[in-house]
Length: 283
Image (cartoon, rainbow, N blue to C red; front, side, top):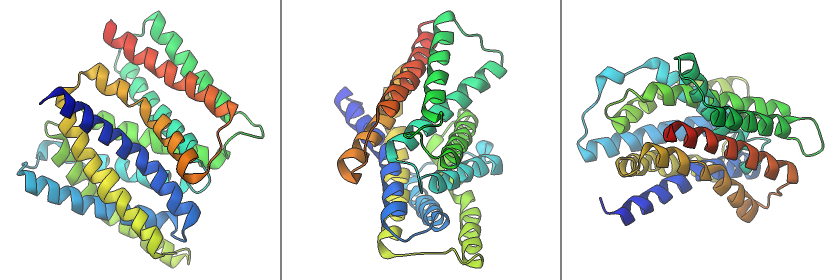
């Protein structure tokens, strides 16, 4: 694949991943849709879109990676993500999510017996300090409950990512895991109806469909197309830009305000993760 095409596809995928944060925040701040319904519309539409993409590309199902546990982790990420964005800004949510994902994957590596160099330990300490600094009580601290939900979403996505490393065909595996979340997503909508918290409107549904079809399904398809053209270091490193893109998008399109706390935390967390990634691959 030409290098220019790899770069273009990579950029599209990163903007799609950041777009999920923006779309969810817009839906839950500016429309009447409830978090459970947003999740249901997102996962069902994403499952249908991914299934159609896999069928169109003629990719076979990789049954060796079929797993309800992976689907449960995917659903856990999506539902916690939606409820967290009721209160979090786009940039703060993306930063917490990304930090928790990387922490989960690094923790799994340590549990599996990986050892860290001095530079990696420095990166870990810097990232943890940034996360603690972001969550410490204060006027500019994000709401604790919403932050905890976003951290839980990150852990769930980290678990899903660790399990997905074994997938020989990542796109069909992702498609079938999305399909497996459909009954879980529909049960969430039913629960909202029973508890009289179900709320829908056209704008909210449109945001959920865009999140499911465009920034999720098409985003994953584009990412997995670009991935063979990237080294492991490049693939891990370019994802550092996702929280930054989400934060800039929140400021430009949602009128959100940045803060010195968020800026310093972003530098510490993303810089620390960058050290962890770079040092691991250099070693």
